[in-house]
Length: 266
Ligand SMILES: NC(=O)c1ccc[n+]([C@@H]2O[C@H](COP(=O)([O-])OP(=O)(O)OC[C@H]3O[C@@H](n4cnc5c(N)ncnc54)[C@H](OP(=O)(O)O)[C@@H]3O)[C@@H](O)[C@H]2O)c1
Image (cartoon, rainbow, N blue to C red; front, side):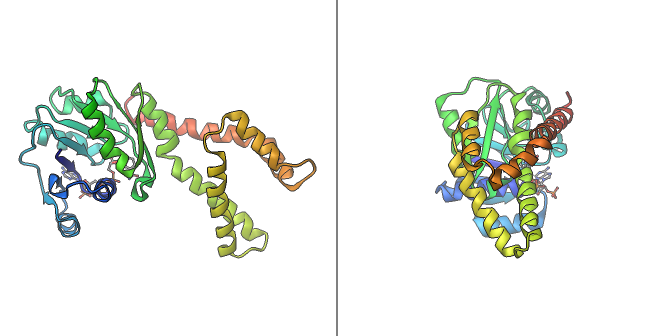
């Protein structure tokens, strides 16, 4: 299987690193990148074919559109004469499949995927969607590529990708915000930055592992377990409840969801 990237920016390089670490044959990968400095860096680092534009695309290969959403129409017009049976994967946020198909001259073999920042450390969760039925071998190709940066799975409607964008696409920033607030709170209590950082980072990782796979009830009983009557945790959780932190979180995610739909033209 040959893989072509259009755009050699952050996300393309995350996927490229994932493929390299999975021992993908690097000679089967090509990148089109407009920036000559980036082209030189990529070709030196990965020893793969890098050009300004793709001049041909092998049949039965995968093309990954890894440019910013506003660059998609140009990129699609550049490749539309080169494709006939290739699988096109767009990772561009927001732009709908019907729009990409139109840019490609009513081409149907299009998949949309939504990775997140954590792809660069192989911890992305990358849902994908397509309108077309996929063969087992196509699913295998898609999951090999997207799974190289973490985990991936298909969703059954394109609308769900807006929810994905609001939850896991933007999600790393939410968690960074909470981590930063907790570290600051520790400093305010007299801990050094380093001490507070170490405490919070390990607590976040430990709590995530502890809570993994639990139902809502399971999570609630974990909270109850840590919050002994009259104890310290109970005091903090009461503040969260009184200030309705759950509602603030829901409002924030809903705002991100609304914006994702607007960007998609809904
Ligand atoms: N980064 C993330 O965490 C993340 C998460 C989810 C989805 N995404 C999506 O992934 C896509 C890529 O994001 P990114 O962060 O990797 O962006 P990026 O770093 O800006 O990479 C895009 C690259 O494509 C190049 N390019 C522009 N027009 C081109 C053309 N006609 N032919 C070939 N190359 C071209 C750009 O060059 P110039 O800089 O010179 O224009 C740039 O190097 C975006 O659509 C974004 O929505 C990103």
